[in-house]
Amino acid sequence: MGQRSAGGSDGVGGADDVDGVVAAWRRERPDLDVAPLEVLSRVSRLARHLDIARRRAFAEQGLEAWEFDVLSALRRSGDPYRLTPGDLLRETLVTSGTMTNRLDRLAERGLLTRQAAPHDRRAVLVTLTQEGRRLADQALEALLEGERELLAGLATDERSRLAAYLKRLLVDFEG
Amino acid sequence: MGQRSAGGSDGVGGADDVDGVVAAWRRERPDLDVAPLEVLSRVSRLARHLDIARRRAFAEQGLEAWEFDVLSALRRSGDPYRLTPGDLLRETLVTSGTMTNRLDRLAERGLLTRQAAPHDRRAVLVTLTQEGRRLADQALEALLEGERELLAGLATDERSRLAAYLKRLLVDFEG
DNA sequence: GCCCGATATCTCGACGTCGAGGCATCCCGG
DNA sequence: CCGGGATGCCTCGACGTCGAGATATCGGGC
Image 1 (cartoon, rainbow over the protein chains, first blue to last red):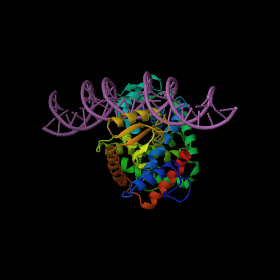
Image 2: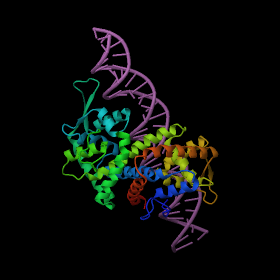
Image 3: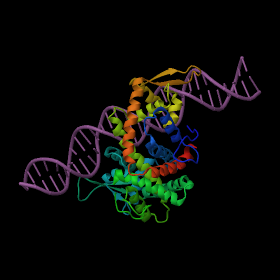
Image 4: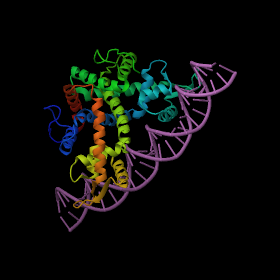
């Protein structure tokens, strides 16, 4: 880990672990084109680090990362901060079993309530409590603060371009 | 999900889910600067989709994603395909308890062996078996094939720029 | 009005990860 | 040569997720 650059995607700047990974594969499997790893391994690895950083940031608020995922989806849906479990699992990319479990525990903590949906008796309406909303707002601010620091090394127009590239990749999955 | 663009980071191309998330926050919390989410939410969300896609690709090879993580680190380390558990956990960003558990099961499957290290009796040497190496090679090829498709929408120079931006963010964590 | 495929949610057992703690070993300074 | 902190790995219980299946309900077609 952390070796010197050996043919990374740009000539300047320090090396990251992915440079090492790519260089190793080029040595071991010169028959393969491992260029895709330059992008996608970095995405995965960066996400992994972000998860760890987020976990730490939320812990100070007394929140788990998965709790924020749910609360924030409800919060940003706007007044009356009410969604169905189905909405929530599409928003957070987890399975229905996982969502049921999450909602159980968030309801126990008093951060949301469940009630029967009026016009579809299969459905449930999940509503943020005042305390849930407060925590979501507070955690969002902490999250943004931390993330702003992480992005400090990129200029505004660079961030825009980066976001645009990522969006083009995302659309393949979500388009 | 999947609403029309409402001020995303570029004016063209379809909208992704993050556009919806950002637009929702701007409506609900106009007092906050949520621009960091344009980049970092996309990173997380893309990584989540990649995980799911990888899981499927590896399943066809009879491999779990976490198994590939370990085997590939050993494979690319080169002959004699031998690392310590400590090397491996740094490479894969998991805890030591997790790595012990992974090595147990990979050894059971006959994909690697453990032996005492000669000059440090605390340490262990983990070595890839022939079958382990075969599986790692085969899975890497499948992985690259899938990832190449995902990146097909970006030109070579765009991929290089994207990789360079990501690297600058990664260096903050790994530099 | 009834059937049937689709939909919404929940149940539950298997599984992988975390994190704190334990133990043996190493290494450095005195 | 010895003590003590650092290091390398493992143990183990708690926890969150998955995934397949169960249940209840909805909605369109006839």
